[in-house]
Length: 138
Image (spheres, rainbow, N blue to C red):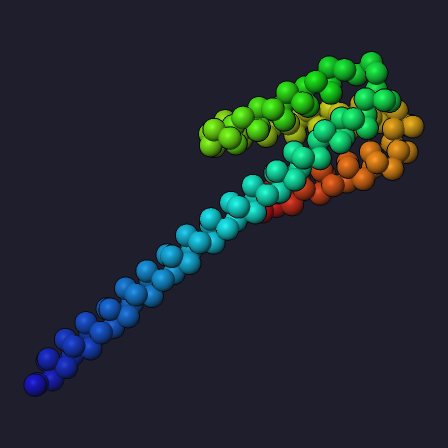
């Protein structure tokens, strides 16, 4: 075997190692993306599970703000439907509507000092706000 054969054999070996490394990195990236989407789904599910608690806490204080509460529950239902259908295109706008509804709900809650002082409301508001922040930062 001459030097040319050794050079070609070395190039084939380097190319093989390079291709295996690229493949392994792509597989790792695929698993990371899947894991991150799963984390987002878990955070969204936890957030949506807290919404009925928030609405129930607010109902007693906000008898005249029924439309705001209904808008939040309708948006929550739209998000749940989009997630069940696996419709990612509809999930984004539904999450946006839910975020706006929650913003309106928290803004209306400012007019009810007894509600703002309620420990259950503050706890649920904090949990939902933290999840919203951590989700958008992910």
